[in-house]
Length: 215
Image (cartoon, rainbow, N blue to C red; front, side, top):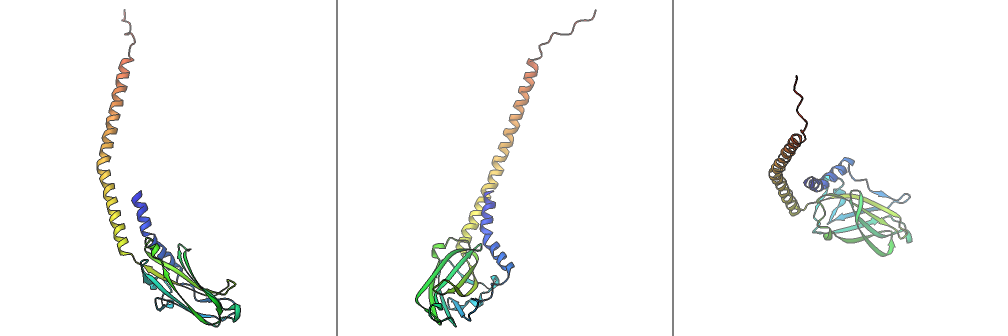
């Protein structure tokens, strides 16, 4: 049972990727109703428009640090402009980590850069992850957003997991081959002992007098 559980955990990210792929590509770029904000976000120098689906996900590792650049134009002036950028990585549809970058003045046109460091999550499962990027004004209203995908590959973690599963499988087969016959022999001996005791009990309780002789 333990090996089955480990296999399920090991394959979970691939299942997540299949679920995401079944949903189709990431949602189109969205802007808040009533404004004409246009924005872009770059992942390590590449526009995330190149990573709209599971099949086109960017390659990445949790041991690396990504550079993320936001740019926008057409936001309202004054306090209605963009003042903060967010990047969220999702796991099973829920936020696993959120990075926020705030600037002191809200701007109708501008840019924000951040580093996305997830080295503390290097033991996460490998697979395809969805990321949600968005821009907000000081009031917390989302002015622009876009989703994209990254494929996290951890070859050493795969090797360790595979070796662990193989060792566990060998151990289970060994237990089946050694403990199983022993348990079966023990069960048979127990059954024979019980049968012998039952036979002795029948003999000891047969104390009735012999039937009378016919005259």
